[in-house]
Image 1 (spheres, rainbow, N blue to C red):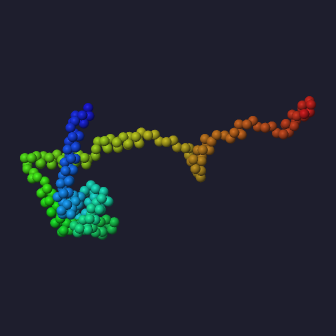
Image 2 (image 1 turned 90 degrees about the vertical axis):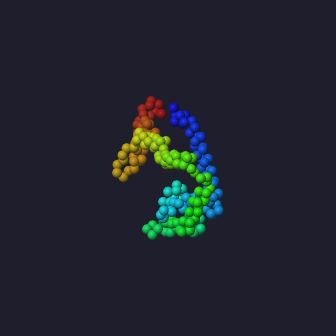
Image 3 (image 1 turned 30 degrees about the vertical axis):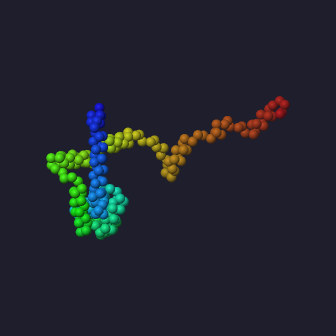
Length: 213
């Protein structure tokens, strides 16, 4: 019996999670709009609030592609909320740092998000929900059994596949393919013909005939 059949309401739980996420994001965007910020911008500001980091590190931390993050940072930089400077050790890297205006904007964004949601009380089960969601997210970030099984099958297939037969080795100065083709090349059709007798033999045979023809 599969795990899904043992937990028939598993898909319903996933639907509830995605619905809740969409509703929360919509409420957050509405709360941040008067500040000229988006949720993606706030995530980037929060990521560099503790310390500066290069753009590649920031992209890995917030789980977005570098190109997408670059557009968000470009807008934040134009607003004066972050600075991007070349790394002295590696000119290819951009160091992202939060400005004083960025810190103020981040604080305002956090307060706007808090005001946008109902007050959570301990008896509402929010602490337990947060703990379960943390475990849920961690389980998705870990390697999945399906991915591990696929990788294991690929390794087993490679190990069990016999090596392709190689052509005979050729002497120095001659390619392997040419040597191999020479060995398997069929004989020329002329080689199967019966040798023709010399002209003298043919003439002698004619002269031996009684009619001389």
